[in-house]
Amino acid sequence: MTAWDGRFTEEMSADVQDFNQSIDVDHVLFYEDIKGSIAHVEMLAQCGILTHSEKDLIHQGLRSIEADYENGDVVFTAAAEDIHLNIEKLLIEKIGPTGGKMHTGRSRNDQVATDMHLYTVKEVNAIVHLIEQLQTTITERAEENIDVIMPGYTHLQRAQPILFAHHIMSYFWMLQRDKERLTDSLKRISLSPLGAGALAGTTYPIDQQMTQTLLGFSGLYMNSMDAVSDRDYLLETMNNLNLIMMHLSRFSEEIILWCTHEFNFIALSDAFSTGSSIMPQKKNPDMAELIRGKAGTVAGRYMGLLMTMKGLPLAYNKDMQEDKKPFFEAVADTKKSLNIFNGMIRTMTLNKEEMALNDFSNATEFADYLVTLGVPFREAHALTGKLVYSCIQKNQLLMDVPLETYRSIHPSITEEVYTFLTPAAAVNRRQNLNGTGTDAVLQQIKEGKTLISR
Ligand code: ARG
Image (cartoon, rainbow, N blue to C red; front, side, top):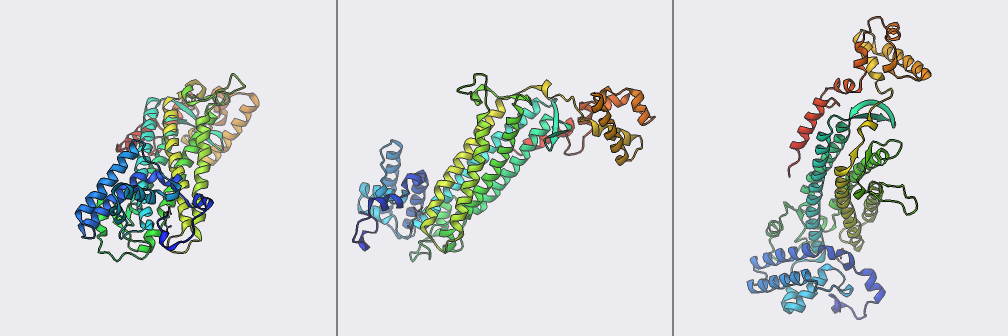
C-alpha cells in the first residue's frame, strides 16, 4: 500500500522500498512536520477549504500522534517511505478518511522544504547560543589570566611577547564573525515555501501569508519553483559551519601543541583527556584531535551536497532527499564540538612559568629602543640582528649583554635598556587599539562582552 496505489499495478520490491525510503534519516523532522501540518490545516480552515470541525479533528489527531511519539508508542515504517507519509498514515489510522484531507493544496515538495526551513532556523539559533557560551568562557579565561605573558609566534617560530589573553581573544572575534554570519543568514533561511505545491503553485484559494506568520517565518518565496528546489540555505549554513569548525580546529591544533612535553604551556583536565591502552604515562588531547578531525568531515559533507545540487534541473528531483543526512550530521557535529571545546577550555590549567620567555622574542624591542635614540629602523634592525647573532655564538640572551657592549653599539644606551627588554615592557608598550598591551586587551574584553547577548 503506497500513497500512489491508484496509478500502479505492481508492488515495489523490498530492495526498492529500502533504497527509496528516507524515514531512517528524516524522522528527525517529526516536530517540524507536525508544526507545518497544524499551520497548513489551520489556514485551510480559515480560507474555507476545510471545515472547522475537520480542522479540529486533524489537529487533535496530530496532537495525539505527538503524545504517542513522546511516549515511545509510534512506529515508523519504511513502507510509508518518509516522515511526511508516515505521519499522514498514522493520522488516517487514528481519525479515519478526514486525515486524507490534510494534504489538500500541498505537495511533499513544499512540505519537506517547510520542515527543513523550520529545522534550520531552530538549529542556527541553537548554534548561535553555543557560540555565545564559548565566547563567554573565552572572556572569563582571558580576564582571569590577564597577567600571563607568552610567546607569540609567526611561522611557528617565537616572534614577540604577547598576553595569553590577547591570544585567546583572537578566537573570540573569529567566533563573533561566525555568529554574525549565522544571524545574517536567517533572513534567507526564514522563508516559507508553503503554497508552492509540487512546483507550480496551487489552485486552492490559500493564504500563504497566514502560514508564514503561523510558522514564524519572516518572508515568503516569490517563486514557487525556487521555493521547492532551493537548497542554498542549507549549503550556506553548512559553509558557515565549516568556518566555525575551521576556527575550532585551529584552536584545537594550538591546544594539542601547548599540552605537549615540548611546549608544556597548559594541562587539560582529566575529564577532557584520554589515556593509552598500552603506555601508562600517556594523557592524550583526544577531544581537540576529534574536533580537528570533524572539521574535515563537516567540510566533506558540505562538498557532497554541493555536488549533489550542481547538476539538477528545476524543480524537485529525488536527489534532493540526499540533503538531509549530511546536513543533520554537520549540525550535530558542530554543536557537539562547540560544547566539548567550551568544557575543554574552561577546565584547562596554565603552566605560567613554562610560558615565560627566555629567548630572543625581545629583539624587536631592542631595535625599537635604538629608534628612540634616532637610529633609522632599517639600521637598528641590522645592528640588532648582528647582536643576536653574536649572542647565539656566546650562548647568551639580550638581557645578559653587558652595558659596555650596548654602548659600543650606540653611546647613548643606558641601563634602562634592560627594563625596555623585559616581556612585560614589550607587551605594555603595545597599547594601540588592537595591540597586546594590558589596557588595550582589557578594553577588547570589555567590548567583546557587550556583543554577547544571552
Ligand atoms: N522524502 C522526500 C525528500 O526528502 C520528500 C519529498 C518527496 N517528493 C517527491 N516528489 N517524491 O526529498
